[in-house]
Image (tube, rainbow, N blue to C red):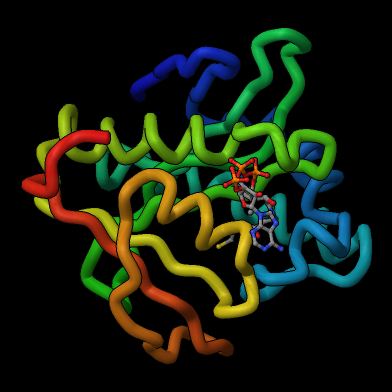
Length: 174
Ligand SMILES: CC(C)(COP(=O)(O)OP(=O)(O)OC[C@H]1O[C@@H](n2cnc3c(N)ncnc32)[C@H](O)[C@@H]1OP(=O)(O)O)[C@@H](O)C(=O)NCCC(=O)NCCS
């Protein structure tokens, strides 16, 4: 399973030992506010984390890529998830990210999303990547635009309407 570095972070596949720290991140209402199926209590967050982390690990086994655990180099702390995921409803690979609140507003999501995008195009050879966010999630859409994705449409997705962004590999680098 691929491990990569960004200037300030390490991106490595999740391990089961990450579940408690990941659950603590997902227990914060502001973190899951715009996330489909976001938990409302610490118990729900723990249950979600216990399901999602093994699903991420399984995704790596099936596809050879997946969401990484994003680790702050300076502290060794789990920051959240960052990486690539196949979305059956869209038939496409999305860049997805969710970071703990102390890391917001410092360019970390942009740093990780750019590394994810480059990994998708350069290492995996994908022709296109997408990203989706609740239409109200302006910070997430700003990250998408900063890594060169452009708005496409507003498709219905699970229990919400989302903004769909995309970028083709042929668009050139940024
Ligand atoms: C969305 C999220 C990943 C952004 O992470 P981050 O590390 O703060 O992002 P960055 O610092 O790289 O960039 C955020 C950009 O959004 C902008 N932004 C933040 N809040 C904003 C808002 N309410 N409206 C418009 N832009 C906003 C920032 O100013 C910044 O843009 P700039 O560099 O041009 O100033 C983070 O807030 C998060 O994990 N949220 C909870 C989970 C989530 O919503 N994940 C995305 C699901 S689609």
